[in-house]
Image (cartoon, rainbow, N blue to C red; front, side):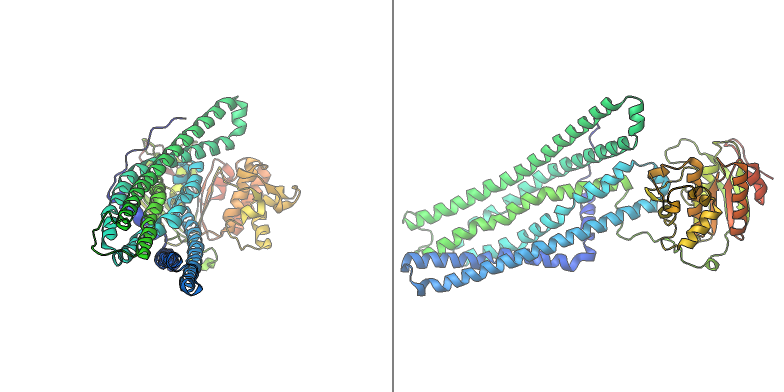
Length: 569
């Protein structure tokens, strides 16, 4: 399942935009995040008094032996600094982990809100496995950015500076050596990081493709077995797995390279400092003009590795930043932009019916085209639905009746013309292929109103003729059905969807072939029950049924694309 590599990503403004977006996810947790950073920096700065205590202790032992009076003070300082470092380090890690957990949950809500805002038609054009990968593996790829990279960046900004000031106060030559070698690390990290981001994005793209492919094949497993494609699909899954393995190893190679570069420069710098002190104490090198105390040399030697330690940690976490940016780039590519942090507001289903009068819907010169289609499905549609009216859309299959209902529901934006509809109304659409989730029939109904009582469920089940077949099921409305309504016939699934739409108490009810697959008696009972329940509501129904056409106030023939106008009856 080979795929072309992702297109080159613009390095400058887009990377900064994605970084700002990642940082913006911290906004609800900003206080705790700052506490985590402060603890990380404090743990690093405390190494200065700890190194001083160790150098003081060793100097006291070597010069005064194990005299209790000589070692008591440095031992006390060492114990206090060690306890403080352990405490603030533990607190920082604990708080950072909690912040990361909250940010990941916040990100998943943002992605779900962005998907809901784009509507069902947009989601139909996406692979469900790919969307799942965005909210799982891609979101998870940002976790180390918050727990690793950001604390390491704060540590690099402040801890080396504190160590440098401490070293300069003891020996300006050692301080100068540290100052000269310090800029080499960021330069090499920047060069290596460019490759790390590209490799990380390639890895995440391969992971998303493999996840989407595997999810799709699992859902179509029965069809694959019927057509004997099992071995071929297994080979494709194996190929996708190998692709992920190769890309993961490429990312790891870059991460190890960045760490190795920093280790090399840090080792060379520490070695230079050790050689300088060794020659100075042997009397072979005198750059200061005065003898250097043993405690000062030990202090500087202990601090030299710690000067580079934050940079090494940043190098180890630098690929975490690259992975997070790669995940942001993939999210941006799927959604056509980086989703905002504000959740999409939902209609309040608890608003009394009187708050929204029955709407009048009007389409004026509307052209409708499905995403990716070459030609519009419908052209120059002019249609008015009076408030409280019942309108039937008729015409041959494929003429665009379902498309027209989706436009009225707001799922499909007109390519041209205008759709007029009162703002703030509740809309419900019961389509031909309703999505039913794994769970009980009652659970699927309560999607429209989670707080609905059993009496309300029983009422809509009676009206939609769900109670008719539910009475024959083992547990009635509490009977568990499979995903996509497995266990129900096509007509039964449509009736469950209709009952769910009724439970929403819509101002505008859109029905797509609601009586298909029903026998005449059941169809008549359904229309009679709807007649009383839908009094005063606006109803638009796509149908081929003469009984439904007799039930509505008006029949409108949907024009074929070549026709200029439809005919009204």
